[in-house]
Image (cartoon, rainbow, N blue to C red; front, side):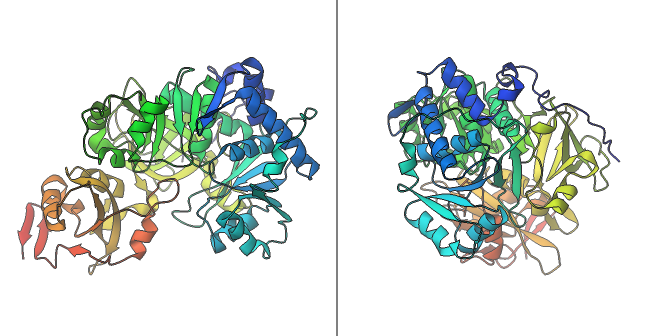
Length: 542
């Protein structure tokens, strides 16, 4: 069994860099904002719709909002849901709640009905802020079933009216170890769980993101990620810590991306899910590399087009492996990258790959990724209201990620799959992630998703759902023959679907449960029905 002794003191994990230079007591979200505003009040924190907002302006707005929320009864520990699109008003609310010591509960703006009710009820929300229109109406539709929810503020409306007033008296700050946020997971393998994040934990995400990307004071970071996702938060905090300027957007335009990057001077951005593949899938232009972007933080990095993408657009890709619960544990760097590998563990964290009995496996063998850290505030504080799930995930003194990976002899980590997303075919465990990498290797494929499909022989058959590049005309049989030449025989998909788009969450993760539910697809191609059989030596006609 793995060892369980990992002593340490809160705040000692990050020993150098931006966060380490800040006194521990000030390592709260509100404290970071106040400190930056005092040091460089006229520095622009973000641009929104061509309007610049300085640190002094943002901090003043946050203080006014915090005071007026406090007057409405919001205080230490109050659970407040923010059901809003990415906007300055969301950012003000996030930091105002942080200064009050209240607990932000970000809600996915795609949720309605049962899912929305589930999260508001589980988080014990007493106050909600919702954008006017469909989001406000969605909360009103479930409000009668939420006795703890006593007030809903609309934006614009009763919420935006709180954004004006006099600068208030200082507010007693929370502690770095206090809970700042209950952030719900994607729920891809079960019901969403609310992850308890302390102020210091969220701040450390920003610090590590800035380290990985080499973020500098002269950088301009595009942040289009929703604030209900950890990436929207750590991108903002990375800018706050380093002095970089942020261009804030409520959504990403693939068709206008590079023109927008040139116009806004974007030097860095975060690409979650299939963004790199979508950008690469656009027809080449002679000025592709003529842009100011120097680094893209891609999760996952597109291994099959890694160097092609870097060369085409004249930039560097970096990536990291981690989760909302665990932080950014493993990363590549601006100086070293191995396409397909996540990078090396950050020495702050102790990362191991173990078997089902929590015994470390040899290098080269896959297992579950587990992590621990001497500084307890660099990992989450558990799952909200779920002691059994917390105990199961944090057993034996380690957090169990639920991810399957392999460490190679050099110490680099290779992500394989979510344990529950792997495909079991005739005794072989197949990584859907690896199938997708190989499927995307076809020159006319923009992106793909691999899932298991029912088999007459038990276990699974491999099914690949493919989005073609713009203008491509490749058919499923041609794809099958290509994959038969380029994939290990047991990975070659029996079933192939060609679709216009993959179903995605608002944070661009592919919703594989929807692909599994849509079986068979409207135009699923079956290699067996088409007269093909895959053997160890290649495809044969039956």
